[in-house]
Image (tube, rainbow, N blue to C red):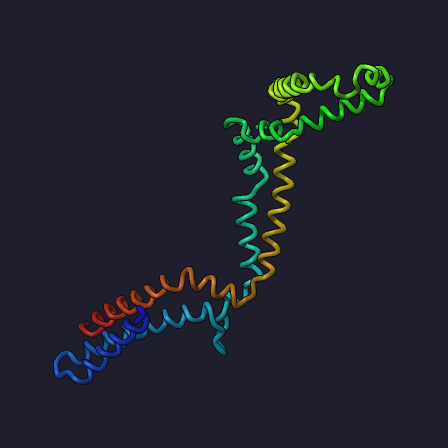
Length: 236
């Protein structure tokens, strides 16, 4: 049993009591009719927000204005949340907090140093030194260099990516403003795609699920204040 039905039902009971009671009959009827008129008027106003009522101009305004509703959602998302400035600040904050965006250690760990070594050996063997190395045992003669080469390469790359010059160059490449603009454009496309799926019926259901339960209190208070006015009228 919802608030609207209960309020109207109580108002009708008071009206019935006014006709049945030999005492304060007119006062009870005034309270009941005023309460019922206040409650039913507010209930009709709430109903008119969501449903088209014949001959009542302005009814069904929420589904009728669903295009404006969608535009308002997009404006709220893009102008208040996903602005270029907000995304830029987020990226810069992430860069400052521990350098998480600029952490290249996983990339260095993923490097296949064996292939780098094999590429070096292949280059040497196809160069003018290749014939000389063949006389000294070929590729096997270079095998003792593999481990020192790998360790040196790892150390050199680590020093390079940890240098201030490299980090500054990388930060310039990771232009927070440009990234923010790109992300904003993609977010806007996603929002447009999702909003295009909305229909007047879906918009109506969305708004109903958010506010209709709370709008029921308008019916309750309409009945209460109507009843109070009826009491004043009855005792006047």
